[in-house]
Amino acid sequence: GVLITGLDPAYDGDNPHIVKAPFEAGLGLRAEGVVLRHVLEHMASPLDFLASISRANGGKGRIYIEVPCMDWICARRAWFDVFYEHVNYFRLPDFHRMFGHALESGHLFSGQYLYVVADLSTLRVPRARREDMLAFPPDFLAGIHRIAARARSRRATIWGGASKGVVFALHMQRAGVRIDQVIDINPAKQGRYIAASGLQVLSPAQGTHNMTPGDDLYVMNSN
Image (tube, rainbow, N blue to C red; front, side, top):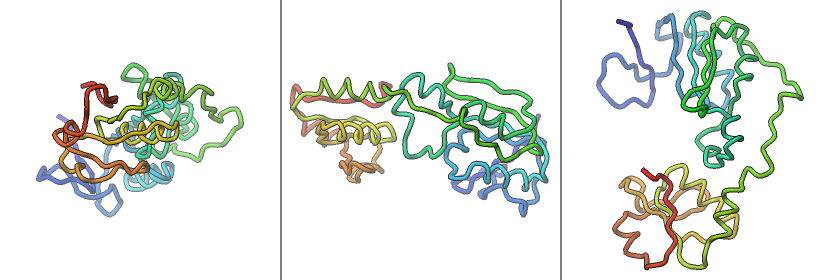
């Protein structure tokens, strides 16, 4: 019963309710509410991005924002959640400093994500305070160090060439562990190379053909 318009400049489909463009004033759209799920962490200038949404919506309306929670990442030592696709990380108090009026906020997905519902008209530049600075736990990479300590001198393969595989390969290389190849089921990745480490991505058939009994296999997604 709610009229929804989607906006995505990368949309590749034929749904008439989705506009293949960013949300800009020139579109002539106005909404009572704006939903921004897992977008803001990808924006190089998040405050400017929110300001552009506010301008496009006439400086009013409510916004729902959902992003990964940096406090959860630090508490869980989730090194795999700090990666190249996310250029910003947020804690709940950050949004209370960015908005003068937050109607509701909290955590979702067992604390892994956080959300806030706020009035766009109250968006403001947050003040930087020393007590708000973030410090990574000194043992943040303990999981990587444990894996590297158990690594053998045999061939090693990573199964999964997406973001976790990219970050894992880089950390393992920095820890002095040799990774020989990456396997991924996505044909678009096969024959290409993952970022930073430069490892080539092979198909399951190619990758397993290169493997021998006793090789190390690191699976990035247990599903």
